Image 1: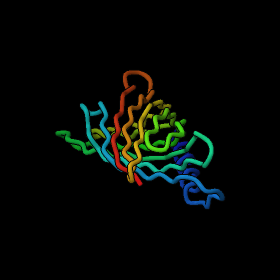
Image 2 (image 1 turned 30 degrees about the vertical axis):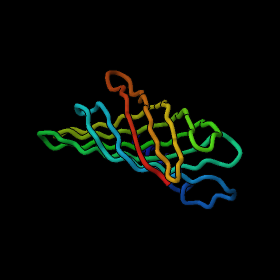
Image 3 (image 1 turned 135 degrees about the horizontal axis):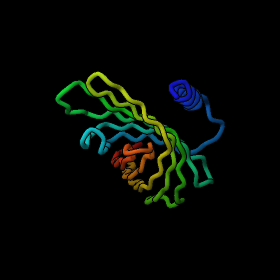
Image 4 (image 1 turned 120 degrees about the vertical axis):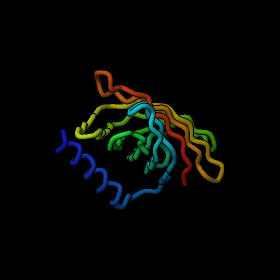
Amino acid sequence: MKNHSFAIAATLLILAAAPIPCSGQLILVGGLVQTKDLDGQWGADVRFGFDPPGIPVGIFMGADYFLTRCTTNCSLRGFRAGAILHSSAPVIQPYLSGAYVVRERELAETSERLVGPAVGAGLRVTTGIKIQVEAVWEFFGGGANQWVFRVGLGL
């Protein structure tokens, strides 16, 4: 799984850095994220996306880093890439999202990598800046499935 995750991340990085031969809306959102993992951690989130002109579909990739408060050494971070289906309204845009998620967790002496799909719904409000609110369900199997909530401001 590690090799696949690296290949996906490298491909997305190349696509994000490559010139895109059309106009559209580039989206950069930074904000807060909350998860139930490690007893409900809060963290920082950044998302880069592109909405091509004339169609209600966009692509994105993002990363989370959680501010852990464990009694032992621990860390929690995540990476995701996916697509959104959004309305074409200019100010208030509800959307649905689907993504592939990699969540890495280290607790004391052990580390774990969870991978799986995620689906969510959100709302973008554009009033000079973008305000984005989103709820996502991550499917990792077993007892590791979880809700992740994000709120952020974007350009």
